[in-house]
Image 1: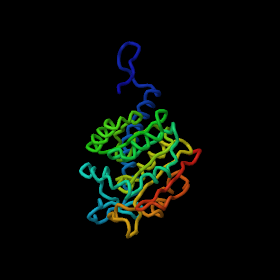
Image 2: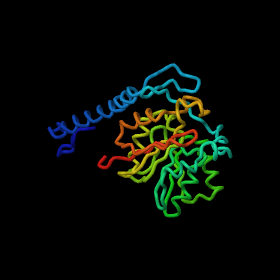
Image 3: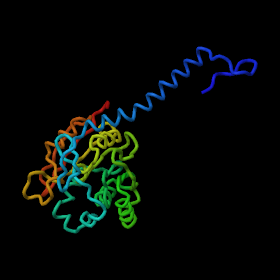
Length: 259
């Protein structure tokens, strides 16, 4: 930045107003330089390094080691025919209370198994955001959506911290067996809550922890207590838990109004 031009065309001595502008700009640049470092420190403080278990990433949040992500190589398991009786998705969908015209976000949509079923229930007047953060899984998702002619679905490539849905636009956000894999669960959940309309619902579908009848690796399960503990740091109110599914529980929250 240069001093202002004097009346005779020469660079003159900067007036006080110009000096104040220089000082303000310098303070702004300094603040911008420090902000990313402060943000990084805040994020790091939420998480703890732990010895990595075979199925974990060596990073813990609120006493829980975060599980490794199931990549596109495991996509066939999501579409297996046995899923209908092993997990009873019909009971999950019934618990969601979907009505025509709703706007839904399927967070961690995978191949779109639940996306397609929710899209049919919300109908042509509604819409489903199918959010996926893995490009390889996104490619499979788009193929399945095209094959099933799911025209009221919008595929969204999210990030590890942001589902990239419009703010306060969602009636219902659903996470089926994915929350335990989020690398940044606090940031991701905060972003999802911002996407909910006031009073909108957020649903965790997770495999039940500490249940010998559930044939899932322990790190890919969650207890209701742990889910509610992690949700409690956000502007969410617990509504109910559906516990009568074979392998999973459906834990439902509502975004508080005025937040």
